[in-house]
Length: 232
Ligand code: GLN
Image (cartoon, rainbow, N blue to C red):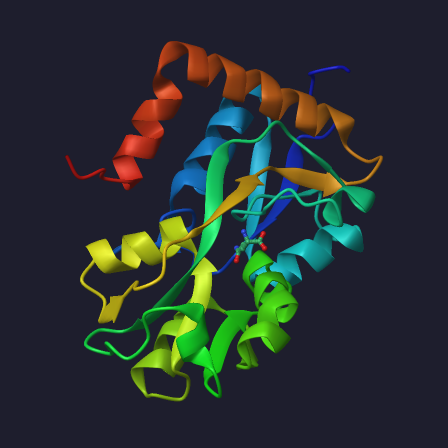
């Protein structure tokens, strides 16, 4: 596939608050792994990006409906999604995890969630996981739009637990959020940049090319290290 841009500006949809992948810094500018990565792809390949930080589910729908050219939003490559999207090579290994309020030592296992409310974002891998295991563990699911809303719901005890991707939960823990993670994360789920199936193949080609170059030069590890501090 050609790795030249066919448009001067591509519209890229993303989540609204999904640190460390996309979030607003103290100056109100959007930063994060997804943002920096996409900007680098644009810079290396000579196009402009018009970001739309509209929330995960809206970002996915914007690409499906052709209102955006691509989506980068910590989006997990799933069997279901590859029916409707073309994905780049994976750029991050993720997985989902439960978080509860700090000091809630009653929840130590999924079975302790019986009769409890758990919140997840609409249309996410976490929502899928919770749906699949709902009958087994006997909890109910509260669907919310943003990761901030998950943290708020937990904070005001509207729900007993939340589920989101582990790097996002881990970032919140590192930032001193009032949460703890009593249950080990579920492994599996890699992030990819996506376009609507059959559209903008050059975008995927340019993304893959720049990602491979950044991995080779060490720039990609440097980018991850900028946002994710690994404890040693
Ligand atoms: N990785 C998860 C998914 O693809 C959540 C993404 C997100 O909330 N931005 O469903």
